[in-house]
Length: 76
Image (cartoon, rainbow, N blue to C red; front, side, top):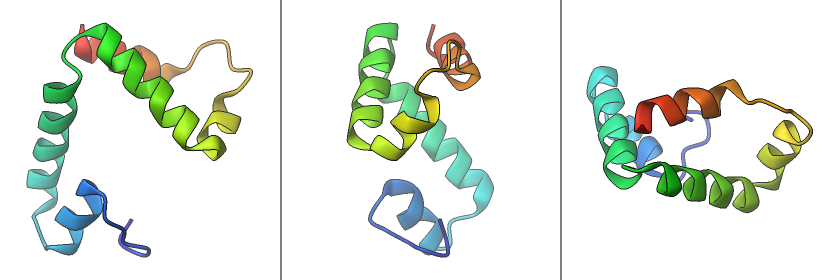
């Protein structure tokens, strides 16, 4: 992220010199505040995969994605 900065929230916080611990807390707050129920988390995941075909290709054919399991437990 620091090698190729963009306009994402994560990139802006890192480029702005925010301490890594603060970045972690802010990202968690952003995710949990926006996706506070399973259907929003699922919709957000689907949107992200459809918006980023390279990531969709990485998970295509995988029957179980550990990151999704963790995300679901976090949101639920």
